Length: 356
Image (tube, rainbow, N blue to C red; front, top):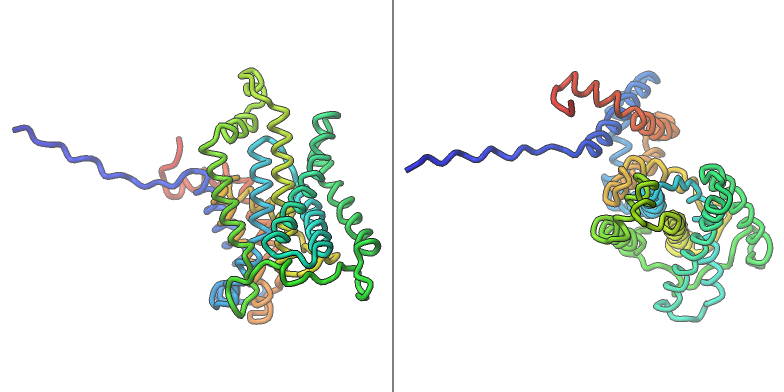
């Protein structure tokens, strides 16, 4: 009877991309701790205050999830655009236009039941965002205009256009500020957790992440999107519709950013205001990069950045650390992400292993 050779134990190993993101975040926190210590504050005390505020209570966790919604939706759209080889950084303007369209439909449709009004608001927001993003797509495909420039410039145009609408035709005549009329109860996303502001937008995020994952990895169109993003020339030689795929990358990014605007208007502000976003569309670029353009990675990165932003105020009041330090930490994450190859070499030298 021959002896059965034991099977080698399965060795768990993080995917290199995920390991790189985790390492970049940890490195950013270590450098951030050094900066906190430099101003005379214990980093452990500061970080404890930050995460206690963001995750240590029911309301804190709800606020973190609430902030996750726009970051995840915009980040998901940017990630899909990146996958198509499109560097669309216009999510901020697309979010503003999406929110404006949702508010306009919500005010005009007052009296309709919620099961009709809310989908109409969401759909109008997605169309507005997609059309605005489609303008940048047309400039790229027709004139070969660099989308990095056009989408940034279109952000400013969109925000000023929204300002004009809020000061003009969409302004609530009974309000002193430039804003639309308040939405009716049927035009508001339902609150999921009583006593908090957490609304059903977080469910939209979960559904969008799952659909994006299935699209990218289980559908032919998702495969085409990835191939075009990796090598458009090869995709063209293989008979793929490269221009159509690029156009789709623009449109889906705008649609998801517009949906983020809808969630902010319907779930948080309950009307359209001039300062709808403190820069969600820009932070979402970092979210998409940190998440490695993977839908579930984007969701995790959005949650992390939401926690940082929610906890920043408490860190400032409880530990005396400037809240803007969280912005520095976010910038450090980008810096370390860009320097991942060097970090990987350093990690391999310190701990051994890794790719050779």
